[in-house]
Image (tube, rainbow over all chains, first blue to last red; front, side, top):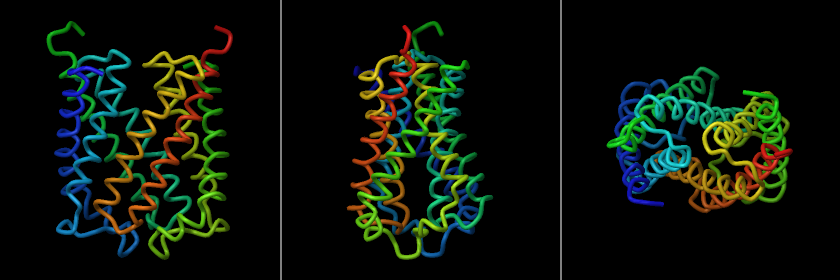
Length: 138
Length: 136
C-alpha cells in the first residue's frame, strides 16, 4: 500500500460518486424505481450520505487495488478492466437478488442496472488507471 | 482464455453456491429474514434457480478473471488473501450503498452480510488460486 494506491482510490471514489449520480440519479433513476418493489427505495432526502460516500470510496479502492496489483496503467486499460469487473460484479449481485428476492420486479430492470454499473466501473477504473499512469510510460 | 481459466471459474461458482447455501440458506437464514424488510425475500420454493446459478458463475469468473489475467495469483493462500480483500470491498460497496439508499435491511443484517461475503470470497478465492497454480 503506497500513496499512489491511496490517491488512486480517492480519485476512483470521487469519480464513481459523480458518475453514479449522473447514471443512477439522473439517467436511469426513474426506470430503476419503476422496476423496484414499492417501499424499497428511499427518497433522496432520506439518503445516508456518509455511508453512500464510504460505499463509493470502497469502489475506488477496489479498482485501485486491482489496477495496482496488475500494474494496469492508462485510461483505456483501466476502463477495459473496470468494465469487466463491473459487469461480473453486477451480474453476481443483481442475478442473486432477482433469483431470491422480490426487489426487482422485472428482468428489464436487472439488465439496465447491470449496464449502468458496468459503465460506472469502467469510467471509475479509467480515471484510476489514468492517474496511476501519470509520469509513466503505458 | 484457456481450460484452466474455464475450470477455475466453474470451481469458484460451485464453491460459492455451496457456501452460499450453507451460510445464507441454513446458518444465517433466520437472522437475515428478521433483518430484511417484509415481502422482499422469496421463499426457497420460489427461487429462480437459473439466475441463482448465473450469479454464482459470475462470482466464480470474477475471481478467475482477476487472478489469471491481472494479478497472477496461483496459490491457495494468495487467493485466500486476495479473495478476502476483494470480498471486503465488494461487500462495503453494495451493503453501504443499499443501506444508504434503500429500506431493504437493518444495519445488523448488512454487517452480517459483510462478514459472510468476506468469508465466502476468501474461500472461493483460495480454491480458484489453488486451481490456477496446479501443475506449476
